[in-house]
Amino acid sequence: MLDFIDLAKALSDENRVRALMMLREGELCVCQIIELLGLAPSTVSKHMSILRQARLVQARKEGKWMYYRLPDGDASQRVLEAVGWVQNSTAKDKQIVADARQVKRVCKMDKDRLCACYKKGKDDG
View 1 (cartoon, rainbow, N blue to C red):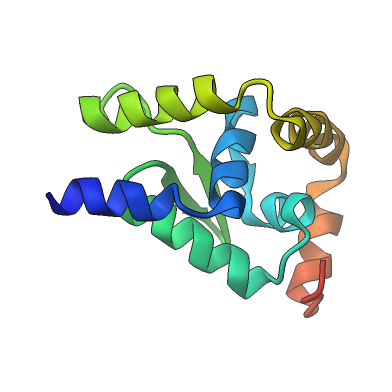
View 2: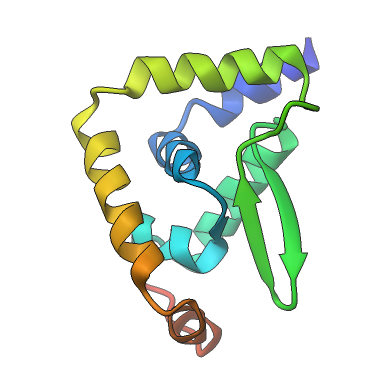
């Protein structure tokens, strides 16, 4: 029952759903997610923590930065089904489609420069 509640909680926020769907394009650094969502770093970190708790995303740390990706085949069937359901349900959503275009733009940006902006305390997206 707790797994279901964690999943439901994680999917109950538009920004978390947006972040989850951004990861369809591949692994993203937290700085890239901050740039895309236009939210404060602490807010994005909290959202990503909730997605991790629900096992909807996987994370790895490299230096000071966290990188997030969709779960791989080792994730539980329930989690993989939830991610698939969200993908199917939001495929034509205008915001999700716009975000997918923006992911491509942000991925072309110099990641070191982008992350340096947030390291210096850029907190307002």
